[in-house]
Length: 144
Picture 1: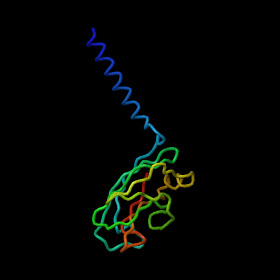
Picture 2 (picture 1 turned 60 degrees about the vertical axis):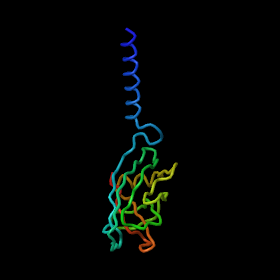
Picture 3 (picture 1 turned 90 degrees about the vertical axis):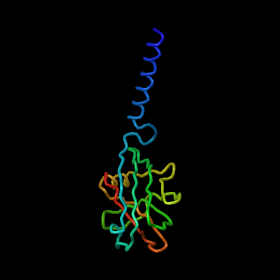
Picture 4 (picture 1 turned 90 degrees about the horizontal axis):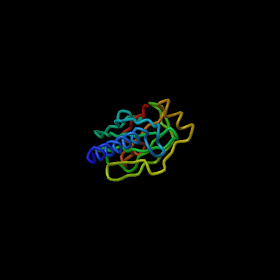
């Protein structure tokens, strides 16, 4: 009887943990995860680079931003999430924190209502800047 009770309790705890994970936890519950590929061809104007990048971001229903991108073949100096439709440049929305070839959303990063609307419309992008391409060397749209 004791073994069965312990097994049942263990199963219940695992089930509760799984349910908590499905709820999203934290401030980004109900968020949308998006994968992004960065390419020099997506820059405006296009960059003549062999660099690339990949990453993933989660945008919470409350605007909370988490995630990161990593690059290959880019001597990056900084990276940002910007406002702008494909083919258009725009202002910085979230400055990303550099750690080697990875750029992450800082703790507490959050979009306002207008920026959330832009995200839902596909009008946010990520790009990585370098000394050679100060306006951006690789770029990718955040498509929800």
